[in-house]
Image (cartoon, rainbow, N blue to C red; front, top):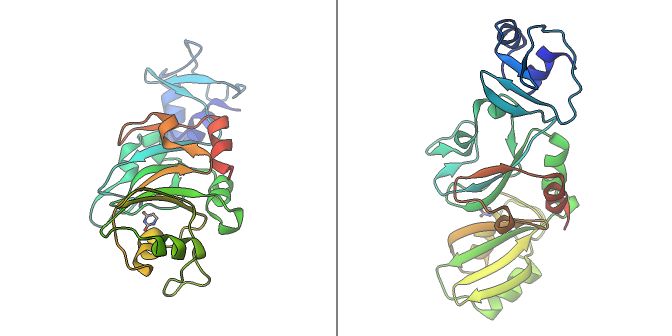
Length: 235
Ligand code: URA
Protein backbone atom coordinates (compact mmCIF):
# COMPACT_ATOMS: atom_id res chain seq x y z
CA UNK A 1 0.00 0.00 0.00
CA UNK A 2 1.16 3.52 -0.78
CA UNK A 3 2.68 5.35 2.22
CA UNK A 4 0.31 8.34 2.19
CA UNK A 5 -2.67 5.94 2.07
CA UNK A 6 -1.22 3.89 4.92
CA UNK A 7 -0.98 6.95 7.16
CA UNK A 8 -4.44 8.17 6.21
CA UNK A 9 -5.98 4.74 6.90
CA UNK A 10 -4.45 4.79 10.39
CA UNK A 11 -6.14 8.08 11.31
CA UNK A 12 -2.99 10.20 11.10
CA UNK A 13 -4.78 12.88 9.08
CA UNK A 14 -6.14 13.80 5.67
CA UNK A 15 -4.31 12.52 2.61
CA UNK A 16 -2.84 16.00 2.07
CA UNK A 17 -1.68 16.30 5.68
CA UNK A 18 -0.07 12.84 5.51
CA UNK A 19 1.73 13.77 2.29
CA UNK A 20 3.06 16.91 3.95
CA UNK A 21 4.32 14.93 6.96
CA UNK A 22 6.08 12.51 4.60
CA UNK A 23 7.65 15.25 2.44
CA UNK A 24 8.87 17.06 5.56
CA UNK A 25 10.73 13.95 6.69
CA UNK A 26 8.57 13.16 9.73
CA UNK A 27 7.76 9.58 8.74
CA UNK A 28 10.05 6.60 9.31
CA UNK A 29 9.78 2.94 8.52
CA UNK A 30 12.32 0.58 10.09
CA UNK A 31 14.11 3.65 11.40
CA UNK A 32 14.57 5.09 7.91
CA UNK A 33 13.06 8.40 6.86
CA UNK A 34 10.85 7.94 3.79
CA UNK A 35 10.08 11.09 1.84
CA UNK A 36 8.39 9.52 -1.17
CA UNK A 37 4.61 9.69 -0.65
CA UNK A 38 4.09 6.99 -3.28
CA UNK A 39 6.55 4.46 -1.82
CA UNK A 40 4.76 1.15 -1.30
CA UNK A 41 4.97 -1.10 1.77
CA UNK A 42 3.56 -4.43 2.82
CA UNK A 43 1.23 -3.62 5.73
CA UNK A 44 1.61 -7.03 7.42
CA UNK A 45 3.15 -6.40 10.87
CA UNK A 46 4.15 -2.93 9.69
CA UNK A 47 5.47 -0.53 12.31
CA UNK A 48 5.96 3.09 11.35
CA UNK A 49 6.66 6.32 13.17
CA UNK A 50 5.26 9.80 12.70
CA UNK A 51 6.88 12.71 14.50
CA UNK A 52 8.86 10.17 16.54
CA UNK A 53 5.77 8.34 17.75
CA UNK A 54 5.53 4.64 16.87
CA UNK A 55 2.38 3.10 15.40
CA UNK A 56 1.47 -0.48 14.56
CA UNK A 57 -0.51 -0.76 11.33
CA UNK A 58 -4.00 -2.13 12.07
CA UNK A 59 -6.45 -2.79 9.28
CA UNK A 60 -9.27 -2.42 11.80
CA UNK A 61 -9.25 -1.73 15.51
CA UNK A 62 -10.86 -3.69 18.34
CA UNK A 63 -10.62 -2.05 21.73
CA UNK A 64 -11.73 -2.90 25.26
CA UNK A 65 -12.26 -0.12 27.80
CA UNK A 66 -12.92 -0.55 31.50
CA UNK A 67 -15.59 2.15 31.63
CA UNK A 68 -15.87 4.25 34.76
CA UNK A 69 -19.08 5.93 35.95
CA UNK A 70 -20.07 9.35 34.61
CA UNK A 71 -19.05 8.75 31.01
CA UNK A 72 -21.55 8.61 28.15
CA UNK A 73 -21.27 6.20 25.21
CA UNK A 74 -21.73 8.97 22.68
CA UNK A 75 -19.63 11.14 20.41
CA UNK A 76 -21.87 14.02 21.48
CA UNK A 77 -22.43 13.61 25.24
CA UNK A 78 -25.23 15.60 26.86
CA UNK A 79 -24.29 15.82 30.52
CA UNK A 80 -21.04 14.02 31.13
CA UNK A 81 -17.73 13.31 29.49
CA UNK A 82 -17.61 10.91 26.58
CA UNK A 83 -15.98 7.46 26.67
CA UNK A 84 -14.23 8.58 23.47
CA UNK A 85 -12.23 11.07 25.58
CA UNK A 86 -10.09 8.10 26.63
CA UNK A 87 -8.79 7.49 23.11
CA UNK A 88 -6.07 9.26 21.11
CA UNK A 89 -6.86 11.42 18.07
CA UNK A 90 -5.78 8.82 15.52
CA UNK A 91 -8.35 6.34 16.86
CA UNK A 92 -11.13 8.92 16.87
CA UNK A 93 -10.25 9.83 13.28
CA UNK A 94 -11.07 6.21 12.35
CA UNK A 95 -14.61 6.81 13.50
CA UNK A 96 -14.69 4.06 16.10
CA UNK A 97 -18.09 3.22 17.63
CA UNK A 98 -19.05 1.56 20.88
CA UNK A 99 -20.32 -2.00 20.57
CA UNK A 100 -23.70 -1.38 22.15
CA UNK A 101 -23.99 1.14 24.94
CA UNK A 102 -23.57 1.29 28.67
CA UNK A 103 -25.48 3.91 30.67
CA UNK A 104 -23.43 6.77 32.07
CA UNK A 105 -23.61 5.22 35.56
CA UNK A 106 -22.77 1.67 34.43
CA UNK A 107 -19.16 0.51 34.76
CA UNK A 108 -17.16 -2.26 33.15
CA UNK A 109 -16.37 -3.90 29.86
CA UNK A 110 -17.08 -1.77 26.80
CA UNK A 111 -15.83 -2.70 23.33
CA UNK A 112 -15.20 -0.19 20.55
CA UNK A 113 -14.37 -0.82 16.92
CA UNK A 114 -14.35 0.59 13.41
CA UNK A 115 -15.43 -2.82 12.04
CA UNK A 116 -19.17 -2.67 11.33
CA UNK A 117 -19.42 -6.43 10.86
CA UNK A 118 -17.86 -7.17 14.26
CA UNK A 119 -20.21 -4.65 15.85
CA UNK A 120 -23.20 -6.34 14.22
CA UNK A 121 -22.04 -9.82 15.28
CA UNK A 122 -21.90 -8.75 18.89
CA UNK A 123 -25.04 -6.67 19.13
CA UNK A 124 -27.61 -8.43 16.96
CA UNK A 125 -30.04 -10.31 19.26
CA UNK A 126 -30.17 -13.27 16.86
CA UNK A 127 -26.43 -13.83 17.34
CA UNK A 128 -27.10 -14.54 21.05
CA UNK A 129 -23.87 -13.11 22.41
CA UNK A 130 -24.32 -13.01 26.17
CA UNK A 131 -23.49 -9.88 28.14
CA UNK A 132 -22.94 -10.52 31.84
CA UNK A 133 -23.77 -7.99 34.53
CA UNK A 134 -23.18 -7.78 38.25
CA UNK A 135 -26.23 -6.04 39.67
CA UNK A 136 -26.53 -4.48 43.08
CA UNK A 137 -30.16 -3.98 44.06
CA UNK A 138 -32.02 -1.63 46.38
CA UNK A 139 -34.20 -4.33 47.92
CA UNK A 140 -33.37 -7.81 49.07
CA UNK A 141 -33.52 -10.26 46.18
CA UNK A 142 -36.18 -12.93 46.44
CA UNK A 143 -36.48 -16.37 44.87
CA UNK A 144 -39.66 -15.21 43.13
CA UNK A 145 -37.77 -12.34 41.50
CA UNK A 146 -35.05 -14.70 40.29
CA UNK A 147 -37.64 -17.07 38.84
CA UNK A 148 -39.44 -14.23 37.06
CA UNK A 149 -36.18 -12.94 35.59
CA UNK A 150 -35.32 -16.43 34.36
CA UNK A 151 -38.76 -16.91 32.81
CA UNK A 152 -38.65 -13.51 31.17
CA UNK A 153 -40.47 -10.24 31.72
CA UNK A 154 -42.11 -7.86 29.31
CA UNK A 155 -40.88 -4.30 29.01
CA UNK A 156 -43.01 -1.33 28.03
CA UNK A 157 -42.79 -0.43 24.32
CA UNK A 158 -40.62 -3.49 23.52
CA UNK A 159 -41.72 -6.58 21.62
CA UNK A 160 -41.23 -10.04 23.13
CA UNK A 161 -40.03 -11.06 26.54
CA UNK A 162 -36.66 -10.44 28.11
CA UNK A 163 -35.11 -13.23 30.11
CA UNK A 164 -31.94 -13.47 32.13
CA UNK A 165 -29.81 -16.60 32.05
CA UNK A 166 -26.76 -17.95 33.88
CA UNK A 167 -28.17 -16.33 37.02
CA UNK A 168 -26.18 -16.50 40.25
CA UNK A 169 -27.02 -14.78 43.48
CA UNK A 170 -23.80 -13.41 44.99
CA UNK A 171 -25.39 -12.10 48.20
CA UNK A 172 -28.78 -10.82 49.43
CA UNK A 173 -28.50 -7.67 47.32
CA UNK A 174 -26.28 -8.79 44.45
CA UNK A 175 -27.07 -10.82 41.37
CA UNK A 176 -25.03 -11.76 38.34
CA UNK A 177 -26.77 -12.70 35.14
CA UNK A 178 -26.51 -12.58 31.37
CA UNK A 179 -28.78 -11.15 28.71
CA UNK A 180 -28.54 -11.70 24.97
CA UNK A 181 -30.24 -8.53 23.77
CA UNK A 182 -29.40 -4.93 24.60
CA UNK A 183 -32.47 -2.71 24.57
CA UNK A 184 -32.43 0.66 26.27
CA UNK A 185 -31.82 0.36 30.05
CA UNK A 186 -32.61 -3.34 29.74
CA UNK A 187 -31.22 -4.63 33.03
CA UNK A 188 -32.63 -1.73 35.04
CA UNK A 189 -36.04 -2.19 33.47
CA UNK A 190 -35.96 -5.96 34.03
CA UNK A 191 -35.26 -5.44 37.72
CA UNK A 192 -38.00 -2.82 37.89
CA UNK A 193 -40.39 -5.30 36.27
CA UNK A 194 -39.86 -7.69 39.19
CA UNK A 195 -40.35 -4.95 41.79
CA UNK A 196 -36.74 -4.29 42.59
CA UNK A 197 -34.33 -1.55 41.56
CA UNK A 198 -30.74 -1.42 40.35
CA UNK A 199 -28.42 0.78 42.37
CA UNK A 200 -25.14 -0.31 40.74
CA UNK A 201 -24.51 -2.01 37.45
CA UNK A 202 -21.25 -3.45 36.21
CA UNK A 203 -20.62 -5.47 33.04
CA UNK A 204 -17.87 -8.00 33.64
CA UNK A 205 -18.08 -10.25 30.57
CA UNK A 206 -19.10 -10.28 26.90
CA UNK A 207 -19.39 -13.74 25.32
CA UNK A 208 -16.42 -15.61 26.80
CA UNK A 209 -14.31 -12.48 27.22
CA UNK A 210 -13.96 -11.54 30.87
CA UNK A 211 -12.93 -8.03 31.90
CA UNK A 212 -10.74 -9.58 34.60
CA UNK A 213 -8.51 -11.34 32.06
CA UNK A 214 -7.71 -8.00 30.38
CA UNK A 215 -6.31 -6.58 33.62
CA UNK A 216 -7.49 -3.01 33.00
CA UNK A 217 -7.85 -0.41 35.74
CA UNK A 218 -10.94 1.85 35.52
CA UNK A 219 -10.49 4.17 32.54
CA UNK A 220 -7.78 2.02 30.97
CA UNK A 221 -8.13 0.48 27.52
CA UNK A 222 -6.27 -2.01 25.34
CA UNK A 223 -6.36 -3.47 21.84
CA UNK A 224 -7.93 -6.92 21.70
CA UNK A 225 -5.86 -9.81 20.37
CA UNK A 226 -7.45 -12.06 17.71
CA UNK A 227 -7.99 -14.67 20.43
CA UNK A 228 -9.76 -12.15 22.70
CA UNK A 229 -11.95 -11.07 19.77
CA UNK A 230 -12.92 -14.70 19.18
CA UNK A 231 -13.76 -15.03 22.90
CA UNK A 232 -16.02 -11.96 22.74
CA UNK A 233 -18.00 -13.49 19.87
CA UNK A 234 -18.35 -16.89 21.53
CA UNK A 235 -21.43 -17.51 23.65
N1 URA B 1 -28.79 -2.48 31.07
C1 URA B 1 -28.98 -1.29 31.66
O1 URA B 1 -30.02 -1.02 32.22
N2 URA B 1 -27.97 -0.39 31.59
C2 URA B 1 -26.77 -0.63 30.99
O2 URA B 1 -25.88 0.22 31.00
C3 URA B 1 -26.61 -1.89 30.40
C4 URA B 1 -27.63 -2.80 30.45
